[in-house]
Amino acid sequence: MSRHPHDQADGFFDGGEDRQASRGDDAAWQLVFDLDDLSAKGLWADMRERLAKYADAIPYHDFSEQAFRRAALEGKTDIAETMLNHGFDLPADAGAAMIGELAGKGPLKAAAVIGLLLDQGYDAGEAIVGIAARGQPDMMAVLKKHGCDILQGDSFAVSLHAGNAAMMRYLFNAGADIYTPAAVSGLHGGIEKYQSANGRPAGTPDAARAAHAALWQEDERMWCQYYAATAGKGHPSLAELRAIPAGTASRSMTLMQVAARAGCFDDIVSAALRDKDNPLSADDVLRPAAAGASVLSVLAARGEAEKILDARLWWRRPDDAAKLPAALKEMGAEKLLNPAAFTADIQRMRLKNLAREANMRLRPKP
Image (cartoon, rainbow, N blue to C red):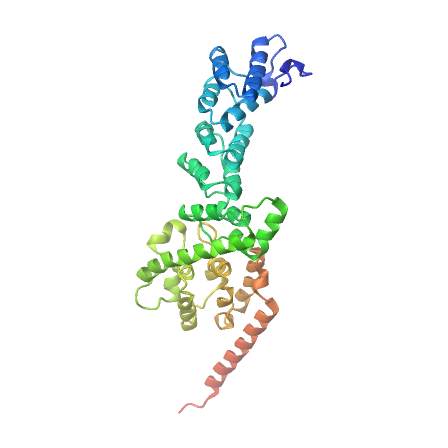
């Protein structure tokens, strides 16, 4: 049997001075004891009857919180709603933690109570992270239905690190960007580090990477159609690739970023080699879209980083090229590049082209 609240040494309800109750308030003390005891025994009909007989606000206490939690886990939505309507004032932090616990570990029948708490204004940030890591899409759909931003906190990257393939697919379909720096970090060793530190992964690193590969291939097909319609039949210039098409303005995504997602990076290379007056810059490939992804992160996530690490693209701007190793390191993908070899390649290409240009100037005029 549960310990009676009269046994508390200080004689107070938990939660601070505003929740103080004297030992003489037997009705309030008895209520929280009864709610705890009845819920622990699963006597839900008796608990409903007990609540119906109590007219005052239900005090917040460890016991009353535990009773609320048990009702939620058992899908007794009417009991939880009755407690909230009777003034059960769950603190903000406790409410947020409750949503996280119910959503991440509870059965789907707890979803209705989660909805009640969300409608009361409790924060779902903790829950979104927990569900992304180990939860089910159906539970995440509950949060979305109640207006939560389920993509906050780069939830897709969390699901990737945890190997939650079903959640990766759900969040992708909900509009998640699969090329954020956090996702790149996971694909290049971060998954193993995360799973080692957190335990109980939803899926293996290999399964997570396979799920991501399937998603980017699907993503490529979608963006390929848009890119073809936007770029037209000709080969876009660097100026055109740097522009933000009307269709991607809300994502702050340049046509160059679209080309990388569409698997059309050769168009970027072609434009860069043609434009000698305003060559490709680090800003072009490091510029983040609204969700944080860049041309470089797209290529790194797809295993195509070598395409941007072409000395022909950087010999005119070697200082800009030096920013790429640092950017890859920040994304946890520094193993994709040997900085010394990259610098040496650019230097050789620079000397070769400068020598060619010098020879052209020294040739006698006809």
